[in-house]
Image (tube, rainbow, N blue to C red; front, top):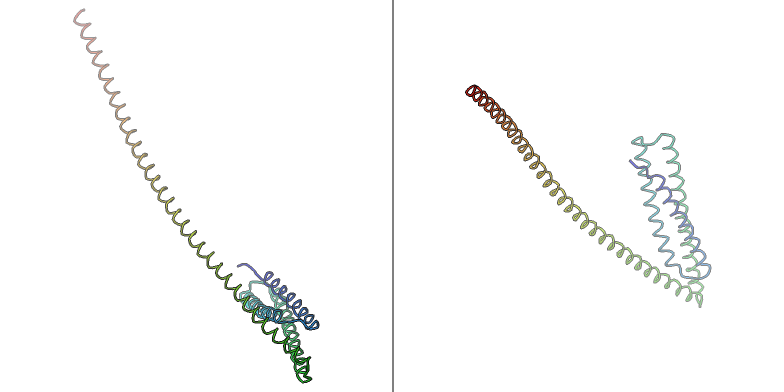
Amino acid sequence: MTDTYRGDIERVQRLIQQLRSDIQKREQKINANQPVGIIDGEIRGGISKLDREIELLKSLIERQNQNQEVLQKEGETRKNKLLELQNVAAELKQNFDKSLRSQKDQLFNNRSNGGKQYKDTETLQQMDNKSLYQNQKQLQQEQDQKLDVCIDQLDSLKVQGKNIGNTVDEQNRLLNGISNEMDKTNREMVNVNGKLKKFLNSSSYCCLYLFITLEVVGLIMIILFV
């Protein structure tokens, strides 16, 4: 069985690195009073994907330890690595939640203060919600397009597989026909060889009989004329 542990670890680490970068970008956008709806959607999607990958990694490590697919020491090392990644993922989620709460508190304070600042912040929040909806809609469309492409590729592979199967069947039929023809030819050659041997044997006997007859006739002629 192929050990996918290394590849799984690399995927989790890449997701963690991407989440860290996105959370930093979010803070920069907030400080610059820029909408964060799109980046929020990407962060939430990244967190969900990270949770799935860590869960798959956990299942892999548990199965390997139960089935003794790795040495005990290696198994302990992998469990410790899993725990480390789980802690990092939890820390990232806490940082994101903290950033969300901080933003909500800021919005609440702005509403309490009223005035132009409240209106600007409310407008910004509405822009964020609209951007988030548009981003989610775009992601859904992209996923649907990718799914359609996968379905088309699968159908194409099925057709190719069927064509290959038909070609193999036709080749097998031709090979069977050739094999039958060769068997028939061999049998005919055996029959011809048998007939030829019989003919040669018969010819030899005829020549012998003719020679004996000529010898006898010659002796008779000698006796008569002598």
